[in-house]
Image 1 (spheres, helix red, strand yellow):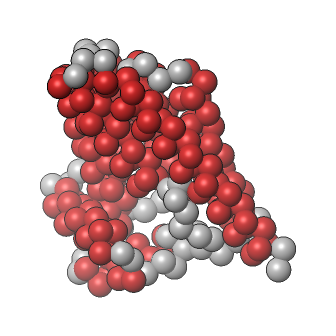
Image 2 (cartoon, one colour; image 1 turned 30 degrees about the vertical axis):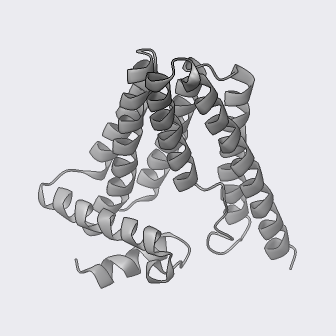
Length: 222
């Protein structure tokens, strides 16, 4: 499958959003997923296998955080690898022509469980449980509103918000990475850094949810 064919198929699966019109970083990420998906497809790796590997990587993150400051660095690496897996599973499905509604459901569930594991790692690192739970609730509500809006007739994504999954991936990686480094340089600072990351997760998620609700209201009430 050529890049043009992949981009067209990807667009159909993402509400008509053209990857060529995306920001350079996003476009580069989609191209990377295309190359990785093409390679895994040639190796006959199934999309569900990639999804399962990504979920296992996510579930290992809170256990890595139990190792202390160095464990936070390991956790950041695991989140990064899980992010690649999350991009590659869909790409494999598109490249090999194995996209399915059931696979979409599995991928969505794996994403939510993975994010819960990242927030559990924040909690292990010292973030209050209520803050981690609030971050999880906002993220889940964001995806639930979009899903229900799509079922109610909203075309496409509605809007790309500040609370999208790439933002959560970035916050998780940066929080664990910077927290681990800060803790190694100044013991005790890791908790502060991860706390700031958790607050950022919640704040960006809340803003994104508000953006999405406004967009849904505008479209479905028209």
